Image (cartoon, rainbow, N blue to C red; front, side, top):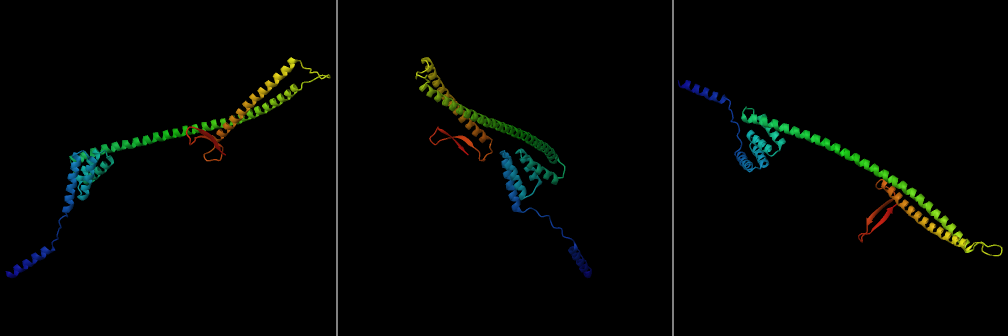
Length: 275
């Protein structure tokens, strides 16, 4: 019997040693669990105070310290309340992927996620539509700006052409004034030394002499007026031609430019140009 007992004891010990040992599932470290609990309480405080974005971030931090689908769900709810819909949708999808058991919470998440997806889709559509409208608006502004530039170019070209015409008119006026002045001075010499007969007697009557003198005065006045008009037309033509050419030129080109600029003294201005 004693030999039998020893044999049974030996068999029992061998059998117990041969049995596989199943280790218990590791639990979160106490420090991580405590940190998660503290962050959870902070999240609750933020939530009660209406600081939903801070609450969502605190729930995220708590989940990072000690993972839990419940914390992910809570973070999604807070992000949704803070109108951070993309962040909320990401948490809801994570929750649905890891919380497979049916229940009221899962059904609520499915409903909320579908609503968020509709809102986000509408926002994306609105953004696309807004971008298209803005693109059309900018293109329209660009066309208007180009049309305005073309109109300005045409106006500048017309100004330049008008300047050249005025220069021509002014030059012609000055030449005409010189001709009139020359004729007036020639007539004045005749008046100063009127024609005489063989006996040296002036052949003009007094009225004819006065008429010739008046003609000289009229010619001199006409010459002065014509010269003034010609000079003004010439100066105006030069200014118009220079300004017109300047406005047509590309920025930075070495073309005549005229502009007004304040002097250091205050209200006075000067007209200058670079050629």
